[in-house]
Image (cartoon, rainbow, N blue to C red; front, top):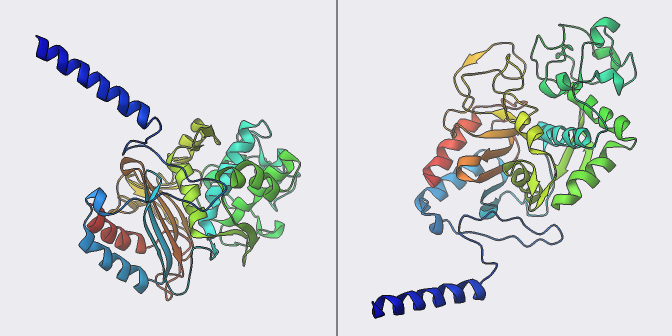
Amino acid sequence: MKSFVYFLIVFLLVSSCTKEDTPNAPTTDSMYFPSTTSNEWETKSISSLSWNINAVQPLKDFLVQKNTKSFMILVNGRIVMEEYFSGHTAISEWEWNSAGKTLVATTTGIAQQEGFLNINNKASDYLETGWTDMPLIKENLITVRHLLTMTSGIDDTKQLVIKSNLTYIADAGTRWAYGNVFQKLMYVVAQASNQDFETYFNSRLKNKIGMDGFWGNGLIFNIYHSNTRSMARFGLLALNNGKWNNEQILNESFFNESINSSQIINASYGYFWWLNGKTSFMIPGEQTVYQGSLVPNAPVDMYAAMGANDQRIYLIPSKKMVVIRMGDASDPANPNFAVSGFDNELWAKINAVVN
């Protein structure tokens, strides 16, 4: 009995000392957020995760072969891999292309939670009546949600977003078609908040998570440019359902809507997020519904921001993982707007490392 009491006292003393000596020590499963005011970022070694170190070089070789400029993997917010190629560096900025649509969706959600807009309202409540070249009765069918889900019914064959190109092809909500009319959401947010979009975006999102970058003119719409770590910061926010450290920047209910099927036409599309693990999917430029998962080699719970020339943010909640890829088109002879066969090839290489 005495020995048991002695053991109990020693155990309690050791436990107490451990807690006092390391009050803020993170557990191996804790989520980490980098500082928003410095470039410091915690890392985690591949060996500590028991990943296959022998598969790392083949992954790097593949990335180089596919014209990659930068590649990152975060686990629980910590950098596990950070690679730069072809003269690209940690401070080099690159275009997100359509992966930046998710920035617009997030900013729209923030504007709604602040009471500036309601995504169920008509788009013309925020844009002037006659913002399209459609009959007014058809224009009035288009809500902000239709813009978020690519179901506005506007002709998608004309990608330059000017009034004369915004013509009727179907009633809003009856047709999914990938196009650049999403850009009108930037005007919706600007009009609703009574400030230009970039100013609102910077104060409500960019600055809060320590991103760099800017909205610059692309060939047919404004696109975001940033360094790779800034793309990873946004990925980390998304991995945590709109929360950064202790601040819920985007309410979780809107974020959950964003990463679930937003309509029944293309099950693999949310609010500008592409969704894996669904039973069917559509791709830009087509009206075909393909059976199966968007990226068969990727985890079924993956969702992704996808932009032209294979700009990617992959989120895998089950692995607490963010994967970033920036660069030129993986196949210059076959450039793409978003989804491409590159995703499946890349995930075969990633799986060889992490599984």
